[in-house]
Image (tube, rainbow, N blue to C red):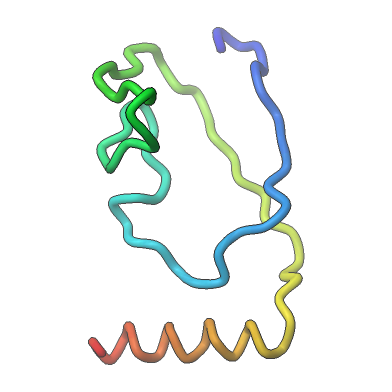
Length: 80
């Protein structure tokens, strides 16, 4: 914030399939469903975001999990 890194972390595991575009990476305001009753989504970030970066490492999916992803992607493209 204001040129200073305020957080850094590692996401150990992620979902092996795609999520909808409206629940993905909101920046500045969370326009999707709130996490819980204690999560207030009524404010918007009004500062200036200079840059954002997401670095994805090598996939750690098993062959079976990758097959599930491939099937889901094929079905999504086909509109099933």
